[in-house]
Image 1 (cartoon, rainbow, N blue to C red):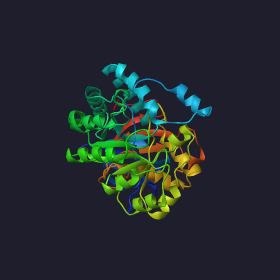
Image 2: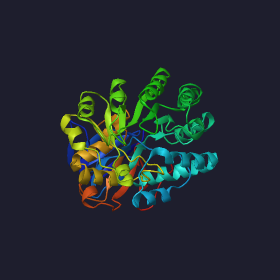
Image 3: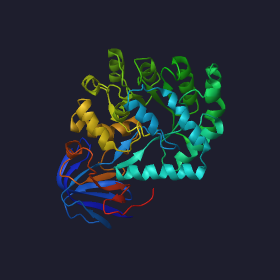
Image 4: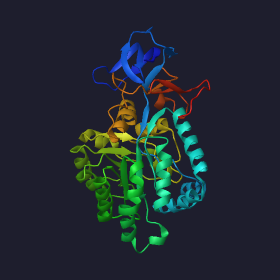
Amino acid sequence: MSSFCIDNIGLLVTNDPGLGIVRDCALVAENGMVSEVAAPGAQADERLDAEGRCVIPGFVDSHTHLVFAGDRADEFAARMAGAEYSAGGIRTTVEATSAASDAKLRELALARRQEALRAGITHLEIKSGYALDVEGERRLCRIARELTDDVTFLGAHVVPSEYLGREDDYVALVCGPMLEACAPDCRWIDVFCERGAFDLEQSRAVLTAGRERGLGLRVHAAQLGVGSGVRLAVELQAASVDHCTFLSDGDVSALAESDTVATLLPATDFSTRQPYPDARSLLDAGATVALATNCNPGSSYTTSMSFCIALAVREMRMTAEEALRAATLGGAEALRRDDLGHLGPGARADAVVLDAPSYTHVVYRPGVPLVAATIVAGRVAFNAAGQSAPM
């Protein structure tokens, strides 16, 4: 049995209702799992001295598109100059990704995963969706599976050009051969229920097929306007509905009365110059809210959860406490994981040491790299001194 201790913690955020926030303590883990919150000086095989700094649960990024090739900086620059965002740019990334070798995709995805570790993200979900054919989607899911056990099949990301005008044929491909090929490497299925992507009945068909294959449900919805995707997610008891930029009062009520998490992606709204989601209405209504990066090359090329937290507080009227919870425990709830997002006994020992006395500094000092160390399953995966370990 191996033990690990983060000692001399000045302020520990546990997200555990029985522990709350603890001052002047140590966090002890055994075999990668939290065993106790103890007094400073607790014994362990390995130790990390927090030197009085703040320790928080590791960020849980429940929405990413990490496996891709290519660059869409010109598209971003055009939006900043006034061009309107649309979902069509996805096809550009499909072309670049399809042209890349397995080795190159692994190299790029691992580099982004390492960047996320440096940003304090201890666990993340990864979607496919940048191939849009059977073998290509299977390839993306297999590569993603090397980096996480929360892989999402997103063959229904956008309709490929060769299927324009016969969209239902593509939906049949997604629900049949593509799903069958990808499901063994996946835990989830997702669909982009939005104008320019998939309509209500097409989305229902994709999600129903995935559920019958044993996959959990996730939905992209309400990014470009109020639509039917949020209600569909609630109806089918999806774990999460993501974007939620445009919500009706009925959508908010439906989410508040359900177990479906509203996952907000503020870096996307920053990048696309769209309005920010009304997080305040969701929280006040009693809905569960998560924050995620949506790391992708077209609309949110960032792995900085701290940036998302700062946007959530400044632009979405969340408190620092609410935003931190959404980026940790909220992400875990969006992935239906009870072992992540908190630091109570029995949780996976995923933690971040901030180079700050309080988590408020994440918002108070925006843009400053405050992650001093990232711990995954009781092991130092990154520290600011330059020591890191591959995932």
